[in-house]
Image (cartoon, rainbow, N blue to C red; front, side, top):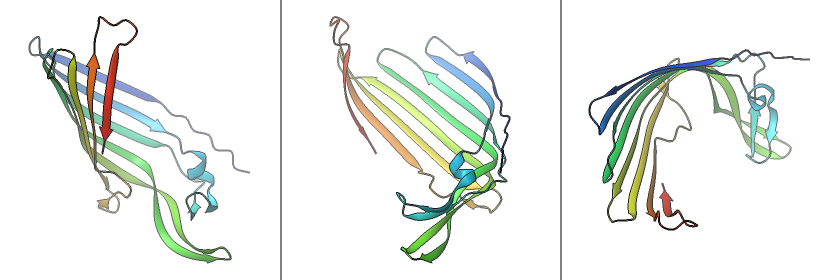
Amino acid sequence: NPQPKFSNGSGTFGATYVFSEKYKLFFNYSIASRAPNSSELFSEGLHHSASRIELGDLSFKSEIAHKVAVTLQRHSDKFSFSVNPYINTISDFIVNEPTDVRQTLRGNFQVWEYRQTNAQLLGVDIDASYAFAKNFRFNNQISLVKGYDRTKDEPLINMPPVNTKNEIVYQNPKMHTLSFLKLRWSE
């Protein structure tokens, strides 16, 4: 009868440097921890919606992450952007990956097993906004992340490398009931 107990904390430290009215530089260090969820601890069999066998581990410890981020921000009415590179080092990172194939009475299923490792995430988030007409603005967000399993010295599985979001926004401060309309698409 397992009775897992986890004590988790988090904290952050940050500083800002203002170059001018338009430019700012932010520095941030944070530490965070996350307890394993019930799937990561107690999975032991066929996961019907994923059509695979999943195996958890009751001996998992909390993940502990140390993240350092630097952000350069420019703000103006016409064109604004922010560039935010970061490095996130996570001890006891929980990853779910395929390990085997099992034949059962219901058919053959891939076996996915949760395990803990030391991981490192390197990434950058870029946001840009351009006002191309009086009430119209184009917004773009790009996120790039690369995850590495430092224990096995190989990339992490299921880590989507690039995510983009674009939108055209209409805003009219004179219209009280309609503040803005957005047309958004993502990749």
